[in-house]
Length: 326
Image (cartoon, rainbow, N blue to C red):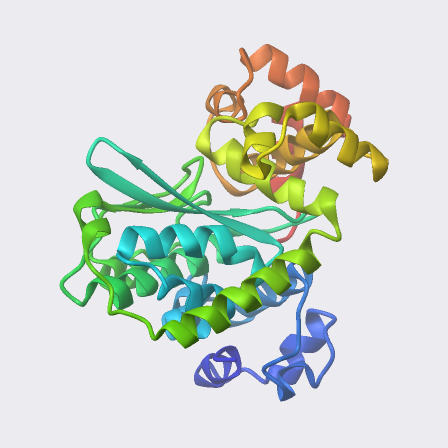
């Protein structure tokens, strides 16, 4: 909802942007209107191009706070401390956004809030990565206070041409061309206590969460796809790990997917293919590193799989997409 104002500051007519992005002229009339991720991707890409500002996502996402995150944001406040709140946010993020996933990981005294796009068919994700990390930064400051600062931010995208606005806003080292978009911070912040929530409010939130989750599970393959994307980020996308999240045996997960005409291996390969295309298109990561990120034993095995998925080698795909307009 902040994008029209940002565009006006650049002297750009919103109608021209929406027309170029092939979106309805009245899409911003109601804040409850939904925009599909591929459509939003076009909108952001057109906005960046017409404004000649490749960090435009930072300009509007900086206004988004925890209170704007709907039911997922409310669930955070039901946590006893920041760590528990963020776990709830990661678990319930799909109640707010079914096209992406959020994960919380800890290791060696540091924690990471990781954002990943799960919806297939995305063409350009650079603005998404920057915008998501801006929102994650804001949420952590809302939970921990203005004294909180990250240790590092990583982006699964190329760096903007002008880094100074990002450096000024985040006040931390920035690393682009990464395998993941994440806010990294000291894990001691996870122990910070959150204000207690009224029991009646908690009950209302948890009831709404259960209702929304039941609706999401109606599309079981899409739910599994989102979990596969999260597990790929965390380094274990095995069928056993996803089945364990559901609290079932892998055979039970397999039977449920087959009822929908799906195989786990098909979903995994679809997620790997989309993730590989994103990294090849939006970053300068070496092919060997992408292969490792996708849990292939070698770059050669990855290249064989990628040719089967797309009909091109990773290098050919990267070259062809670099020649296409953003």
